[in-house]
Length: 210
Image 1 (tube, rainbow, N blue to C red):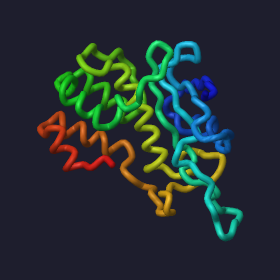
Image 2 (cartoon, rainbow, N blue to C red; image 1 turned 90 degrees about the horizontal axis):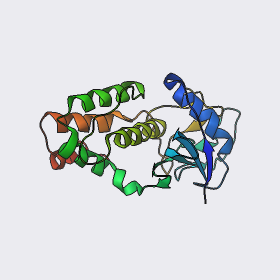
Image 3 (cartoon, rainbow, N blue to C red; image 1 turned 45 degrees about the vertical axis):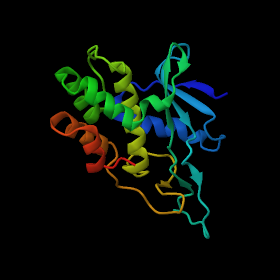
Image 4 (cartoon, rainbow, N blue to C red; image 1 turned 30 degrees about the vertical axis):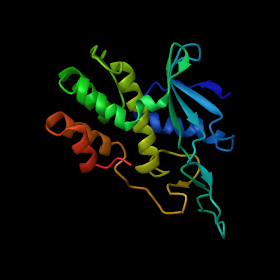
């Protein structure tokens, strides 16, 4: 059973820096052995992040130099939603499921869209989301917030941009570098297409998410 650690991040502007300094010391723990509660409390968890993630690994280098990056994908984690103190099946919050729910239940809500834009730009949810059918609106936004942060860590930012205590690189299992990707922008673009004109099946062809 994973150990729970409560992690409070009060300043959204420093969210990446706070995460790197909290997670880095635990990089050599068994995979997925820790859950940092980032929304809610240990007694009443709402969102956790399971760390170390499956993509995190120590690199095998032929020669180690002073500036060598010994780790790959150092801040990979899994988003863990909770309901009534129990973990929710994450398959309910895949990109496919989130896009379908947005198309069917949320794309016509101006309030919800304003919250999505704010979340995309600033990692914050400053107003109470509207009650809409489908996935609970608050849970939808909170899960998406942490998925987007995870995407930014894995595909967008380098180690200096997130103020990592140690150097690392972003790469696939075969060693191909993956940095400077779109990160959260890819999924947000898919939401825009759904909102404005296209349907789910068309969007999947226009913007492959995997």
